[in-house]
Amino acid sequence: MFAAALFFTLVGCEFEEGVDAHIPGDDLGTFHVAATMDVTTCGPGALGSPDSWEFDIRLSQSGTELFWLNGDEAIPGRVDTDSFQFDSAVEVPLAEPEPGAPGCVIVRGDLASGRFGFEEDEVTSFDGSLVYSYAPTAESDCDVFVGVEGGFGTLPCSIAYRIDATRTVAPKSRAVE
Image (cartoon, rainbow, N blue to C red; front, side, top):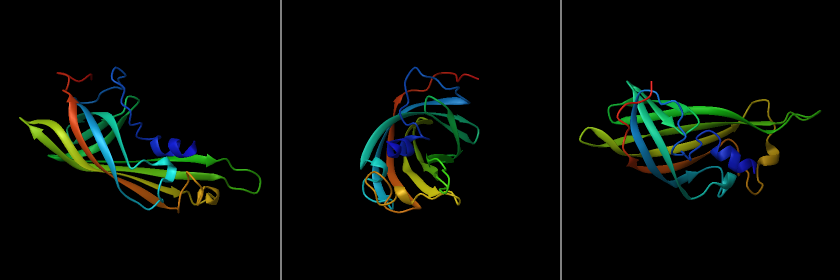
């Protein structure tokens, strides 16, 4: 159970139509994303990571900021003409500290980057990569999660996916300010 929570915690990749996080800037629409594993240093099946998966995500833009809207929050990134990048991290506690044991906290980093495809000056697709990295904090002892089914093959490690997306819902005419 910890594996799925650790794998999907930050991105929250299931965008729910009708669930609207505040939409900063101009709406770019909703995109259906297909992700295919490219490489993993975490081991096969680590954290329950699938070889491929699909999800929907909404994007918005304000100047050089791009927002990955997962229905709960707006994750900020950068955009430069036709390329983008999101870089975020979160600490996920896997084992609470106990007397004589420091516990385990993993820092999970998410890095998404790629290029947009345009039709008539509108973003209609994008492709790129989505990389999840995992590393224990300096004070953690995470050995109990290494070498076990559903855990890590080694730490630190990363899982990289190739992503291809197509716009499925056109942008709304005016974003909510």
